[in-house]
Length: 331
Figure 1 (tube, rainbow, N blue to C red):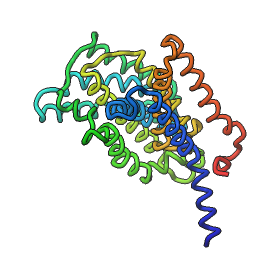
Figure 2 (tube, rainbow, N blue to C red):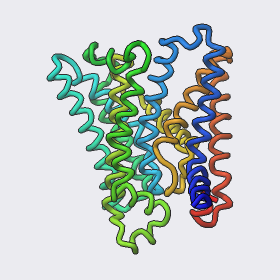
Figure 3 (cartoon, rainbow, N blue to C red):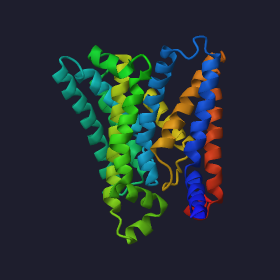
Figure 4 (cartoon, rainbow, N blue to C red):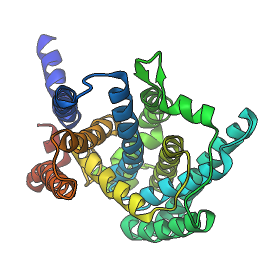
């Protein structure tokens, strides 16, 4: 019995190696950031870091779900920006109007994800090509809605989302935990969630085993659109406005892929999950904060960040070059 428990523990540690390493790296980096920051571990420092980290974490979770099916969604940044523009137009006024506006933003993300899923599943196009095209469409719609930066949002609602609970716990972190508990965990344990992992491991074997491949892929892209829309709503709460910024969308798309890899999710699909991705996103955000507190030249910061991301992605992919079977990942 003891031997079996030890084996189960070793297997669990091996399967969770990526998330655990990402969590440990984030803890060490954030501790260094707090030590070097002039304000130390103040409520404002923690809240600001949490808001930025949650923003990327939500976009990165949106990227994670298609990656699990061995796909890649290059439109998550565009859906993120489009949702920001929609939120800046509709999430204002009375509480009832705010609720309707939030529902419209989430519906926008679901529709974008559904279109991606239809193009990938029914059109049978490579996800990277299909979402590159749809992403350009979503950016165009965002520009149509917001040809110039502007808009507004209900300030009370925005202050709640970006504030702290009791001046201790950032509400954005509570929102992230709620999203994981309400959406990710039920999905992960559902038939379609397990099917996503099976598809990423071997789509042909999954199909031959009776796994609903088409439905699982479609739902994966729908959920990706939903998470990206939630991120766009949070961005609107942070900025109090909307902007069809294609560069911002592209930046978040690339960072989301890096966060996925840093968090231990395989770009080949079939291994990983949202928890590791969250820590990967916070690691990436903390890198930028560390460059700031160590007074690195702003013009050099993108170079440093790019080098760190390249190293992280390379290390995350190096083991996969030697993997012949998916089970080798857990040995």
